[in-house]
Length: 276
Image (cartoon, rainbow, N blue to C red):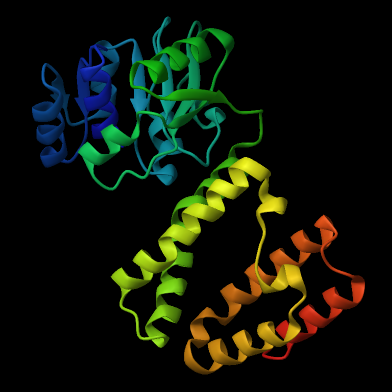
């Protein structure tokens, strides 16, 4: 993430003055891709070089790293964690300094793909009004849109992001596993079920999540659900828990929408429980 942000900000005209990493290879790669930066092995060295410091490190390293830094008046320190709030940086604060966070909702698997994905992406920001205004401008410069999170909401925001990324990938893997039972390889499953996923997302955007719900559960088809559970238990048992959890959520959505009678809800839940 640090390298992708450095590249994107540099291309947008924001001067990237210095980089710090204990990994010599990462320092060299960052300097080569961004250009014009001084490289240091220790984070404390960059405090004399810059006004805004971005900590792009694993979540578990943030508290210890912040405790080893002491900002100068006029400096701001932000991190890129999606799960942690800005308060984790408080040990580094001194008079006249600011802390915040800047989390791009982007899957950083490859630098160039991530830089491209920043265009149109959402970036969650935290900080006081002055810093948030700066971070919003920084987001706009790289083609993204800043969203200010409510205090204390970071963990829920990040949990949703994990479901949208890693959780969705896990769902795709379950779909592909059932596809293999039907004689499809992974590429075929993605080709066949991908358009259905895109249609569902489009419907949810246009109609709302509840109104977009379709399928046997919304119709109260207990027999179909029993057949699904029996097939999955026999041929793809690792998918049972995921299918059941999703079906329980679907039943609740359909019931809230008024599509199911109380008896239909009981029948569907009994069908799910048969394979417990």
